[in-house]
Length: 266
Image (tube, rainbow, N blue to C red; front, side, top):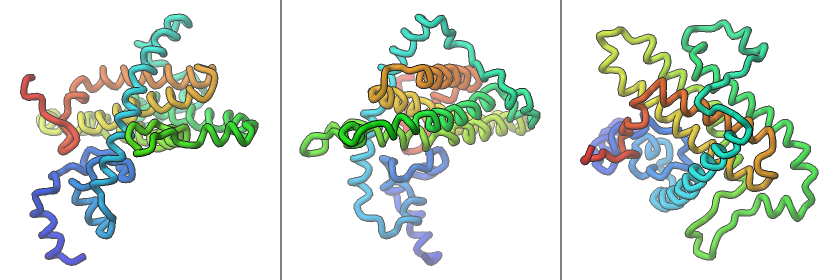
């Protein structure tokens, strides 16, 4: 790609400026690739990105519908078990006791996010035998997508839910570290100008948490709802979600170029 072509792309009004600064880098699942110059540069030969956008928009809409249902069920179960969702329990494990790193790495949100990534690995390790024990008929039922003839209203399959949990497993921690580092490292007089970037990074982490909660809720539909390990994951994620919202109270309101719309009534 030559310089003149890059200049031409930069002048194209179809692309949303800065849209790639606050995304989750999951281009295959993005509903706005046709508005992203970075995607165009990397995928010059990619066929009909608009078609992919429509498919992915339906996928995330379906997953978001699962989010609130999962939260409601989690609240009920937490109340039954006497679990306080307002307290972020990062776990008093030996690994955390030995965690003697930078201030940012010791922030409660960062520590909880790192614990979550380990909990995901632990769950997949413990579930491996369960997967292997499923007979062929059950495996086929679990991995097939449920969709109607025209593909509209496509549900989130078991395999897709697993992909979501794996995609955000470590990214939540990475995005939170960027937000925390940004907040701690900027000078006070420059902080106000940098807060938008901090909130943008925190918002991406929150989106990853929301989608992970929904994905685990979907996975729970294929197993006894909820077994102890799934409940542990969901409780941890919900506590982390509330902690991040407390630490970065303006993150949800951050407007990501292209992705979010400005509320003119606010």
